[in-house]
Length: 108
Image (tube, rainbow, N blue to C red; front, side, top):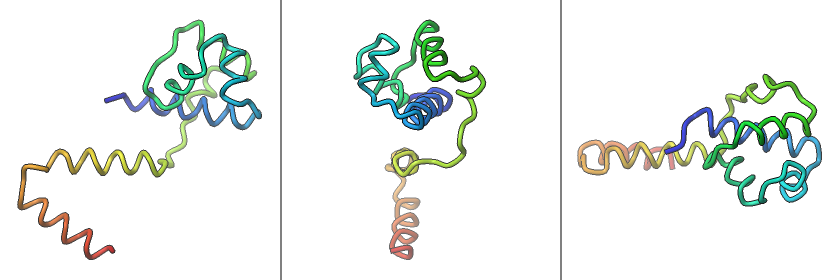
C-alpha cells in the first residue's frame, strides 16, 4: 500500500501539470522520463528521484513548497479504495458484515 504523502504528491503533480496545459506525454518528455513512469508517479504508485523532482519544480516554475499544498478533497477513486480496504479488514467478521450490509441497504 502506498503512503499518504506519495499519493498526495502524485495527485498534486498531476493537478499542477494539467493547470499549466501539459499533456502527460509532453511533460514526461520535458522532465526526461517515460510517460508510464510519470503516470505511476501521479497515481502514487511510484516515487521519483531527487533529480526528477527538481526538474518537475523547474518546468512547472513553482516553489518546492507548492508541491505540498495538498487538497483535503478525496477523489472518488480514493474514497472507493478506502471503502474496499476497510471492507477487506472485516471480511471474516460475519457480524460486522451484516451490519455493513444493513447500512448499505438503508443508503440505497
